[in-house]
Length: 297
Image (cartoon, rainbow, N blue to C red; front, side, top):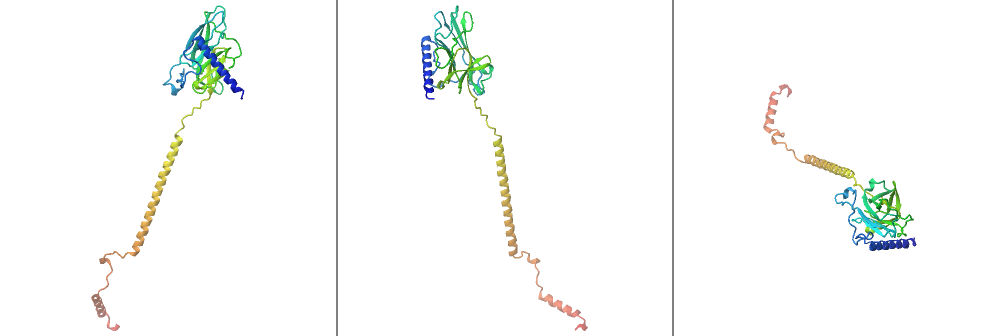
């Protein structure tokens, strides 16, 4: 692990030197394909943007250019798209020279990768696919690149493809037929770029781990919980009030019953029993004596 880190650092430094040399010698694009700028990269330009980015999306730029070739070989050459999202870099003698061919035309075309092929296993596309092609002039035949084994440590032998990615790409792929072939690559995370060496041109794409698209959580559970809580509060309040009302009525009934035992009769005097008058009693006795038979004395 300790030996691997210095090796990667040396490879990156060597690749940067090669790119700087190629740019200086070729007077190529006005921007460097690697580590370009000091601020954050501009918004990514999509062929088929995600729905949430469609309103602000800008169409990505293609690229086209040519370089002369001849008996002395092919010079260093690189081509960038105007938006800096894709580049192809050819080292000196990085294109095979064919008899009768005087130049090479190179084109870069952005594509929707979903229309090209299925993504690599367990990965998602992280940006556009780019169709990088080159043809000889005047024949129009596809260019040939020296058939060498490519790696990050032999940048002078192979062409270098640089792609800008949108979010978190980790790998670079080239389409061979209908299958994606991984290209040895390295990332420049500050510039959101991934670059790798290849002995073929064709369609390239950056890919990364599955994006975690968290769907908004359904509010049904929250609504149900709120409704249940609200009903419980209302029912509890109602039962508490009923219980308090019953207790109040019970206390009032107890007080009323106690008061009725202690209070004097409130019956009007006219309806109360009056003691018999003395005169009436005397008359009653005389009457009884007068009617009494003599033989009862």
